[in-house]
Image (cartoon, rainbow, N blue to C red; front, side):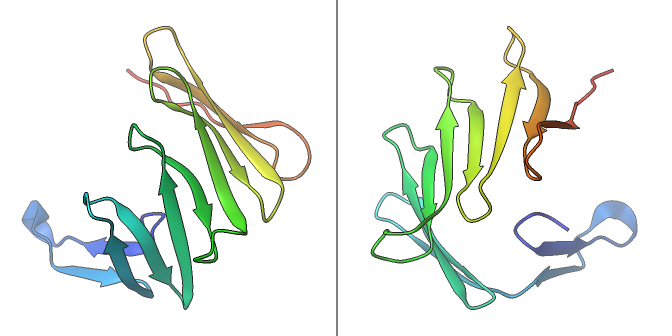
Length: 121
């Protein structure tokens, strides 16, 4: 299952059999084709972008008064921080000099923990 709640089923030969949208009821897009709203499970989230097209904030109200998530990026456009304002949790993304993701840290329970360390090879 993907984080968006979308489930894909592939029978033999990798042909798509079904695509079950797990309670996602709709997406809307702005005038230049960026997703600006998603409704899932009766909750609508509103996305805000920077000038380079990166999502910087996600709000729970159309008036954009309550931030649910915020994101920060480095000069290369890679996400370096995700903050969950509802749970006061922060996730950091660390990259090597070549721009490859080295590790992901979070403090979801109040202490800094290594959550993911991708390995190539």
